[in-house]
Image 1 (cartoon, rainbow, N blue to C red):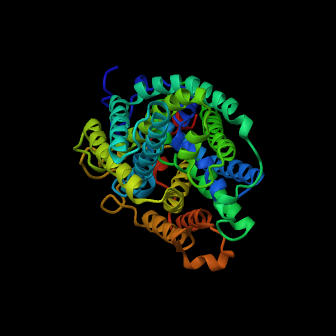
Image 2: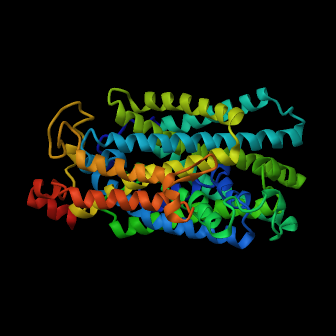
Image 3: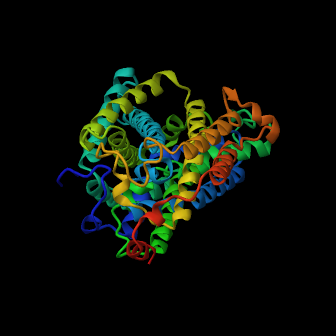
Length: 475
């Protein structure tokens, strides 16, 4: 139970004691929470019917997993997190692009998880004990959830893995009880309160749902997967086994809670307010299990997100210890929770957040994967740590620690994505070229990847490493 001392430095092989089963466990256990469940409600709030909601979530999740899962292999090779690993493409300073993207992704999802979980806990406590639904009540619950989350995040990977093992079993049982609890009221009939299709017609709305509710789940892990696979030894586990485990963990870990969210949204007639509708429609006997699910699931999911945030801030500020960085980002995330509760509209905030970050993060992930394929998984692990040691030079130094070509390719891809995004309060000018359909993630990834392929030479790592090292890693 000692506090993890490793930050974004390279994990020695002797300490890489996890395996593919642990990867499945952590991806399953950490995602069985209301912060992920609520994404299954988004298609319903967009005005889609049952089968359209179901297919959009499944299609988006499967496509997103296919694009995201290979990133798990990068940290399997490098022994450090993904943002640091991306220094092979962006430069040892340019990999700050990945750290900032990862920090924003984790920050948003941490706040969302605590926000949704806290709202449900207050509503359940009101029904069970008559707790007044006031700003003070929300503030106390948010603070308690944040404090419990910080404990797991500060202790680090091993404690979070143990927690995920418990949650994988316990939360599965609680969600199974939930299916029984809400089944009598389930209906596939349309919910008129949604107000019709969010984008005016079926296919644009279906694609919006596939991105916002389905694809966004795997994309949330584009900088997180390496936090777990850096503890898996490539000497004892093959890339194929790790890739299969990532596929399985993401598909099951995301579809189970999201489809539970879609199912309960219809059962609770929760077209506009998921957490409140879920609690109001719950039979009395399920209130205690719902309270446990809201609390435990939120702590597990937000703990992993906060852990990743600490690593990303540690990568940005090498002088800060991982624990100190985690405390810092915890304060910021808690502030975002309060702002989210008092200042945002739930549906608009969630939709805007996931679409914007998907558009920004996808080209970074595509460039990182292209670099991985080009160097065939062969990295100079020591050269990746130049910035963390506050030194200079190495095969990934490029120009003053930045690779201008890769950075420009990412920036161009992200810009195209932002110009093609469709939000409740903003529509990009490129939407006219796509018939009003939000293809921002697709366009940003294609543009960023193509520009990178055109302007960048293959990464120098494979040529720079000794032949014996190349053979060992490739083998």
